[in-house]
Length: 335
Image (cartoon, rainbow, N blue to C red):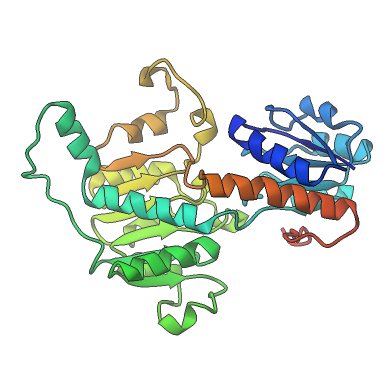
């Protein structure tokens, strides 16, 4: 069997070698380039592909894969919003992802964003840069006693819920499919609106389904408490960024911790000479605020997570190629 990987980073190569040593009968090769209409040619002669990117997967490139006889795709991440499932169905593809490479990594990062905002770390950083080591008047707040609203209580959201309760917060949550391991805790409410109305701190942990694009918009923000702390380490498209900026400007949103952005592909994973060289107006409207923390889609990025992303995606791809049931099949029959 031969498997080709796209978008491979330096930090993944050691785990690729480790997996390859275990599966010496499988030939693997890779590129650091993402999968698109031009690079699809690199997979010719292989049996399966493993992908990782945030850009859309075009029907043209998928058609070329099928022409090469490749119908088994594994992505080594959670998000599937780059695929049009109709294309996959039409072309006869099977798909796997890695939905649980490390829920703790993202949950811990989410918690750190909350804590850094509540304890006003960006403001202290600025004071230190100016040799000002006085604490007054930069007083912080605690999670203990706050109401933390969680939208989406799957693998990641459920860990966040447990961390928040351990820190003394009241948790209110909504999910279209409540987590059975959390239901006895009495945290669920009947609607997203109830979460929005009650939360002192609001965090998103839901995939980007078409119906959920701009779930957090002007109307949703209007339902929130004044001064709410907002966290998004899920998907940038869940939030109307212009509405978020307006909420920060008005003070309705007291602070925002953002690991994902709508237009992150224009900025994240790129090196600029200076912030002035960044052309994205929304990013520039957010980045210099004392009450906004942006991290470049790194909530997932731990050694544990990267290991699991490589091992689970390659193993599932091999399982599909050998006619076995993969660990994480994706149901592409439902859009």
